[in-house]
Amino acid sequence: MRQAIMAAAGAAFVCGACGATPARAQDIVSAYTQFDADRTCKHTRGREVEDYGSWRCPGYGGLGVHLSAGDQRMQVSFGTIAKDAARELAAEQTFPGFNSVYSGTVEWRIEKLPDGSARPFATILRWNVMTEADVERGDGKSTGRTLVVTRLNPGGVCHVGYVDARAPGANEAARKLADEKARTFKCGKDEPGK
Image (cartoon, rainbow, N blue to C red):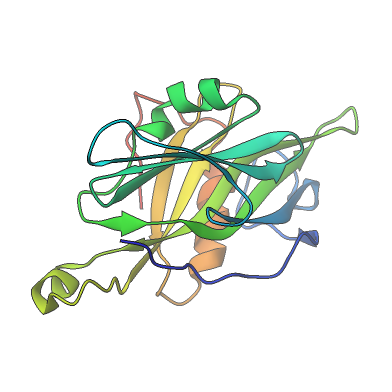
């Protein structure tokens, strides 16, 4: 079940961070990239009936966006090499209910290191997620929107937490979650939060 995700502004840098972090707030910035599974990504077909395959999409600074889907659910991982991204925990993480993220805008949270270089440490991506009311309605439409905060390497690629994208201040809450938790989050040990 394909559903488009709201597209946002392109690859401009926007400063801002919320909460206390190991880096000063002015040392964290955002960059934005967009992807569309049908237009900007390379598709590899699945081999099973409910395996829709995988997509390698452009990302930021050499990091690609790796999508996979099956049984009306998706997974999203990130990395420089598709095979490595597919082995990360994020490549297995999804929601219990049907969901989709075939296109969208990735917000990359980037820290400026003491040597002057920049390193993406987390992403924020809006997913379409079916709610219980959507299932009861039975028309196949998803009204749930969840911002998924994902940690990036080094140290693993995995979901750090989730923010209801329909709530006031959702983007700021997701940035705060990314900035305060992603760099110290232990993939496979820590539980993603809200």
